Image 1: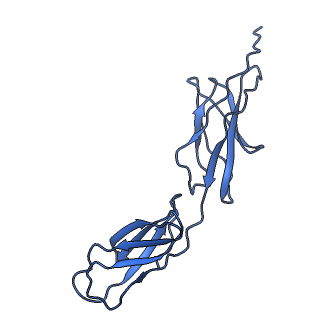
Image 2 (image 1 turned 180 degrees about the vertical axis):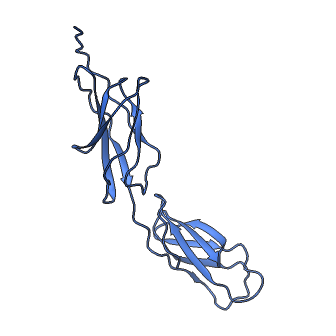
Length: 178
């Protein structure tokens, strides 16, 4: 007969990308060797997995974490004697699976004799805005306070140019081209 009254230490929990557009991310961490790890979103159990003999675990929810928003992810570990650990510190997982709105694009003067014009427009704050001339990227910047300004590298030779803008938010979602 083996008596075990020792409560496991609280597990750790991490995720590779945060914020992310992944609605079923893989959470990893450390827990007591061979313990059952239950992963929670708030008070709701997402599911369980078993820690390896080395004390590591990996868990991917079987269902989507949608809708977008901050998820309070935590974990507990239960050993073979059914002792339950304290909860891990909460991991605030930010789910953003919604693409940013299509950015606007404008130039100060059209037509222009400037081969490196500055283009401006509106885009989701914090998004990376890329300006294209056809399929070629000619400028990149980050939108601040809903606006951006970017000086194009070159639009030589002369002629009509088809400039478009595309925004990518911090979670990796990409807008449609303007």
